[in-house]
Length: 403
Image (cartoon, rainbow, N blue to C red; front, side, top):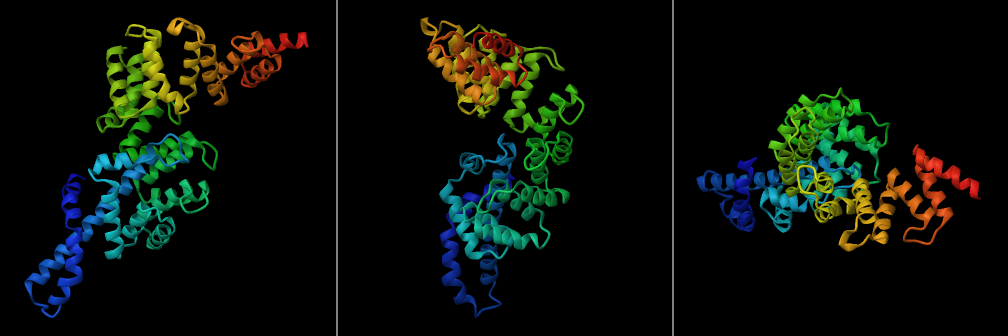
């Protein structure tokens, strides 16, 4: 990988020169077939084309890794910042390389990658299909991504699964991981953690870091495989060493809770902080609970709120609920803030978090910070009761006696 990136800056600075040489100099030498300068020039131009193709393949690999590590299977993660960080190149520079590939290349995958980066999905699809006719696993994987995200086509998990499976069976690691994601999330089919683990493990054995993290998480949680903390640590450490933030966060949880290791809140905090630096919202939530409960640190509600807000705004129901609890119960800033509490409870409730639904039932039943509203109380208690919450069932019984 480093050897590819080493040449990229040089390649992009001479793109214009290379094209000028192609247009004006080559015809002059065309009559001198035996001229060694022509041979050297042709080699240089060929190398320039290959470097651009390699760059676009590197970018596509990064995009696939972003998708593979994304929690929401049906939405592509914005990868521009990740691409720039890993290549050292701006979006404009990569677009220039893509345009050069389109001008010069005859390779179907390279052309598909160039058009894909430029978001001309119709053209990208056509070239990937041509490469797929040659049984190319890279093409199969890219077609899987196109259908998974609905880029230029109607979104279809069935089609995505079909193309990913073709690539996975030919040993393509990113396709194996994304096929694992489809099985784990139950996208377009029944959720199957055993199949997910099978494909994650296949990719992990090829040292795909995000798959190593997924395998570690499944051993940790006992999903699709028997729970095994030793195996969880083994795979999570491999992934963490390669910079996967979710693996660092899971290791933090293991040290925080003493799962398979001696409980060590100092180590837990270090792992959480590393993961947070790399943008992991789950690690922020977990560190927030340490400050909320005073686990290994002095209890600090301000810090807990600060850490909970990002994951809460990204839709994490647990973080939303605990923000509600802090504003509901604690005299933050000298007073309880029931309006702020209700806002976070509502967000968590809409995400199906049963305890938040129960809390909203209480708020409306008694009239805490709102006008008392028995119908709203019944509505939220019913939501929680439908998820098996016994307290909410009891309150519904009691409210029915007053109707």
